[in-house]
Every structure is written in C-alpha cells, then in structure tokens.
Image 1 (tube, helix red, strand yellow):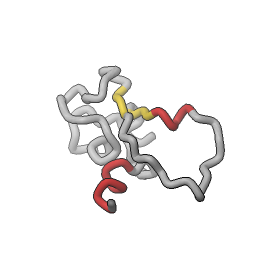
Image 2: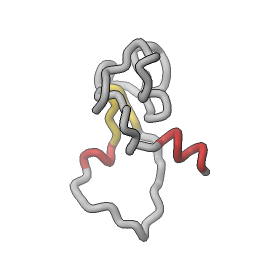
Image 3: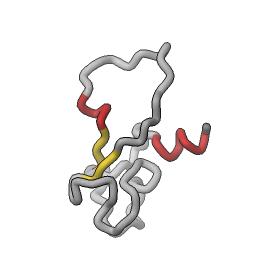
Image 4: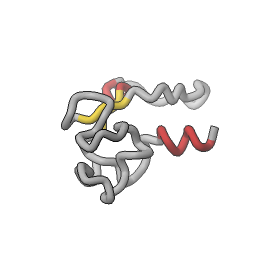
Length: 75
C-alpha cells in the first residue's frame, strides 16, 4: 500500500505542472472518513494521453523530477 501511495501521491511539492488528474476538477472538500481510491487516472497536457512525451507513464511517481526530459517544473 505504501508503494502505491508514493506512486500516486498528488500532494508532492515537485509535481510537473503538465500533470493532470480527474480529482483536480472536483470542487469539494476531502472527506477523511472516505478511503482514497488511488484510481490512477492521470494524463500529460503535452500529449493529452497517459504517456508523457518521453514515452513514460504520466503519474505523480514519474512526473516529479527534473531528470525527466519533459519535466515542466513545479505545479
């Protein structure tokens, strides 16, 4: 479980500004009594797909490092 949390953690301080996910567009307060789904619905705004321009998956665990050629800086 911890590994999935790290992989899908959208609260990272260094997320690429090009990463998007469905829950970004839900305007409601988080409910701490409801377990997070970690459904992994992420996409890159550069490609409009789940893959980044470099062919790697667009998800928080991958889109948080300047070592990735397509990294767009902090959100």
